[in-house]
Image 1 (tube, one colour):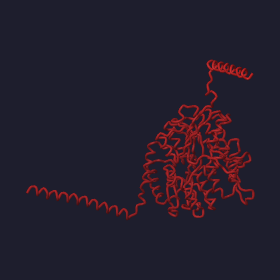
Image 2 (image 1 turned 45 degrees about the vertical axis):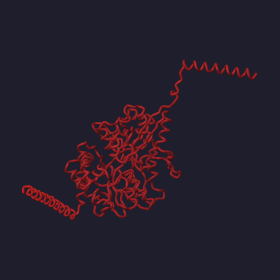
Image 3 (image 1 turned 90 degrees about the vertical axis):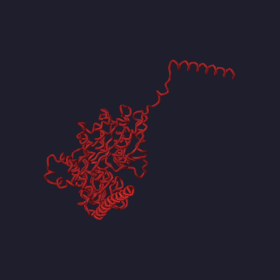
Length: 512
C-alpha cells in the first residue's frame, strides 16, 4: 500500500515537472517583473543642515495640530516614504560641504551629485553656466497633494523667487527654496551697546579691538564693507524715502565700481587689524565662551549661539545693521552632470524637495538646524504653531508685546491673523533672528550674481585682504625693511667691485 502510494506520488511529481517545464517555454516568467524599481539619488547639502533623528522622548514637540519628533534621520524617513508613496526604492547617497565655494570646487574637480543646496548667488552662477536642470511642470502642480513645496511656500518668499531673474529666467524655474534668513550682529548686551551693534562699522570700532569676528568669505565680507563705507548715503532721508528705495538699495549693496572695490579693500584691511578673526563656523563657540563680544552672523547661527549661551546663563542679543542687511536663500537645484535627462532621478529629487517641505518635516529641520524654512505651510497651521510654541510668552508673563508675522505667513504686512504674543526681550533675540520684523525686511538686499570679470577683481581684492595687511605693518618694520634693502644693495655692489678687482689682478699676473 505504501509502495503504491509512493509510486502515485512519483508519477504525479514527474507529470507536474513536465507540465511546468513545458509551460515555462510557452509562458516565460521574468523574475524582475515583480521587483520594485530602484533609483540612486546623490544629494549634497550644507553640514548639519538636516535633521539626523535620534531625538529623546523629552524633545517631543506637542502642537495643537499634531506632535513632531525625529526618531530616524530625515534621509531614512524619505526613503521609506518614497517607497510607500511611489513603490520605488530610493537609495540616497548623502554628502556635505562647508561653503558655497567648496561645493563649486568639488563640482569643478569632478564630484557628481544630482541635487545640491547652495546659496542664491552660487545658484545664479550655476544657472549662468548652464549647469542646472529646470524644475518640471509637475513640480508646480498645486492640485497634487504630495507637492508640499508649492502648496506650502511662504507667499512673501515666493514673490521674491519669482521676481528675481538671471539671464531672463526666474530663480524659481530652477531653485526650490530650503532655508532663508538675514545677516546681523550677535552681541553681548552687557559689554556692547545696541547702538554700536546696529551698524556694520562695529567691525572697525576700536572699542572692540580683537573682540569682534567677521565672515571668512568674500561675498559676506564685501557686503558688510559696502554697508559701512556707504553708511552716510544709506541712512540719508533722501535715499530712504526714494520711491525706488528697494531697487536702489540693491544696486548700492552690489556696487562693483573700481572706487567701491578699493574702498572696500581699505575698509576690510582695517577690519582685519581690528577683528579677533575671520571665521566660518567658530564664531558661534567664540561668542558662547566669551572670547569675542560681537560676531557677524547668519540669523540661523545667531539663534544657535543665543540658545547655547542661554544654557550657560549668558544672554546674547541679535541686531540688524541699520544701513542694510542681506536676505539670503539656500535652495535645492538639480545638476545636469548628475540628473541629466534621467526622469526617474528627477522625480526622486523633486520628491525629496517635497518631502522636506512637508510641515512636520519643516518643523523637524528648523528645530535641528535653527534656521528658518521658506515654507509657511499653506493651509496647514503646524509651522506657525511651532513658531508660537518657541517664542510665545508664558500665560503668567507680566509683560508681552504683539509681534506680527502676517507678512511671511499671509503676505499682508498689516494683517492680524498671525500674531505672536511674546516677551519684550524676544524682539532683540531669537524671535527677531528667526522671523525678522517687516521693518528689518524692508532694508534687506539680495547679493546679486557677479560675472567672471567682476568675480576676478573681487577675488583679487580678497587675496590682498586675507594674505597681506599693510595696516598691520608697524613703523619699525618699515625702517628695518628699508635698512635691510640698503644693506643688500651695498653688499651686492661691493661684491661686484671686489670680483672685478681680483679679476683685474689675475689678468695682470697672466700678462707678466
